[in-house]
Amino acid sequence: MGKLDGKVVLITGAARGQGEAEARLFVDEGANVVLGDILDAEGKAVAESLGGAGLYQHLDVTAPDDWDSFVAVAVERFGRIDGLVNNAGILFLKPLLEMDVDDYRRVIDVNLVGCFLGIQTVGRELRDGDGGSIVNVSSTAGFQAVPAASAYVSSKFGMRGLTRTAALELGGHRIRVNSIHPGGVDTEMIRSFGERTTAEMDSVHSRVPLGRIGQPIEIARLALFLISDDASYCTGSEFVADGGLLV
Image (cartoon, rainbow, N blue to C red):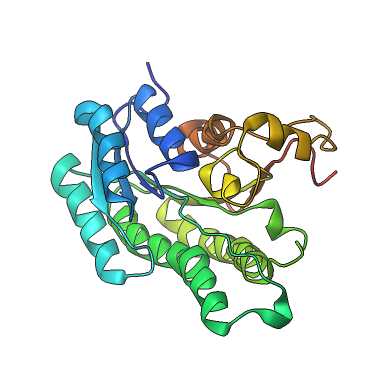
């Protein structure tokens, strides 16, 4: 038996990276998954590779109408929703005194407002059903500052407060809400800022106690735990997976 047998889970930012790893692991554990992203070709390819257990739907996480469609398609196809992983996010680096307000707002909109809309839209469906689990993917940047990343850090600190508030408000509806805080993870988003190979990124992360960068599957396993009934008494909590970076 799989840890997610019979469950239906929505995952944002699922066309690649951590979201793709989560989708594949969840299906392996018995779930049906609905993948949301703006990278339509990549997202459709991932969903098709999952067979009947995967479904792709275009999703701009900043658009309320897209969220309504995302939920509606999931219910129409699979009949219910049991969980959500708010994985979609963007990283933009620029010194604070040089950053345009539009760039700052774009990061906040995708990373924080997108998370809010996901909790709100999916939360209503879970409230009217049997409850469920919501996992918000934040970052170690939600605990410590990062130079030239004021927008990203702001959004990730904000996700911590949003997660805790949602846990307080939704617990009575049998909805658990937790956050994951990865350190450096070997994804396309990170690769776009310099290092191109895993070996190069391991070198950059050599001072982390575990001496290497994280892999998407390692974050996916933590998300699996929180979505599954194994985490039935966990809510409002922050789970760090950073190879010891914050130490």
